[in-house]
Image (cartoon, rainbow, N blue to C red; front, side, top):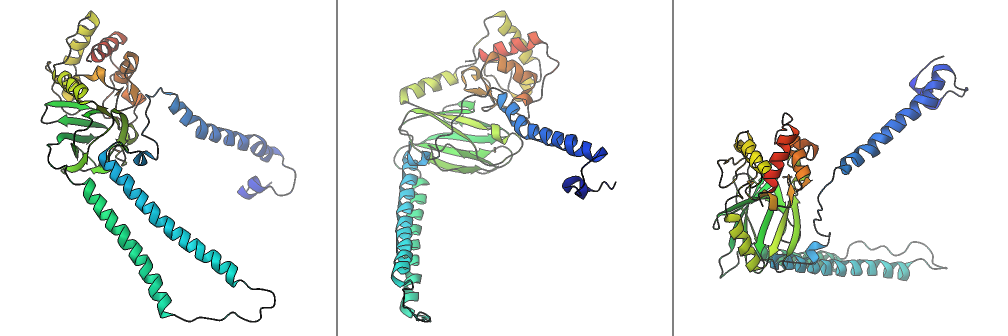
Length: 369
Ligand code: CUA
């Protein structure tokens, strides 16, 4: 019996027996089943990890603008759609007209008349697309200029949006506030985002805010916007930037001017003092481990600047830039092994901590409202 790959796959016409029978009847279906389980099962296991709600806006978000700049982008879209519609109707109409008007009829003989070059037609089909492109070009340049022009007259609110592997830092340099993964802004106030990067190239985008923009190291890329409607809008990093790129989400919280100034006042206060025994223990552990090398908590001796500032962590939307919900149990699990929620994350695991230490740390961190 020759056991070639060909005979295994295709058979040789004879009924299978021996090793061949085992391979065909058992091994191959088994291999197929395992492959199927891997393809179908692994993603379901990954999805089984509880994830916080996140909705980056509908695909048509730029057509339901919530900022003055998005309104411009929306206008440009309609202009382009109108130009495309004119071309579509013109070309389809000409094709259909020719098909009906000039198709062969019973009794027609020989070849139809052949036309070799016609200066008027050639000028027409060069000039018409040229004019259409000129109009499209004019509108595009005008709108690009509009959305990239700083708002005149009023002083915009400056916000640094700094991409890190893999989270967003938000600084309000004139207001003395530093936070992460959640950027609050007032409605009806011109904003100037200074988009930068701490390490590699990221991309900053909230579909309802403005267009996408790259966050490059050593460069200050400007995004101007003025949000019209209070609400919560989701954004993320839109450029592959390493292993945990998918977990670089953030939230844009647009508030009324009054709510925003209350938020700023709160953010400027020092971190809450622990009240319960468990929280006090958590603070002691935090201040005496390597946590302080990366994280800052205002009002304590923790002043690390590599990881997110945790002064008001408990008031934020998630842990790990969208990776885990802000709950005590998720925080415990996060400290024990952040990779469970966010594969590739730069924060090291703390597997040597006891259950009690983890509980205390989580109780302390979530109390930092
Ligand atoms: Cu940062 Cu992708």
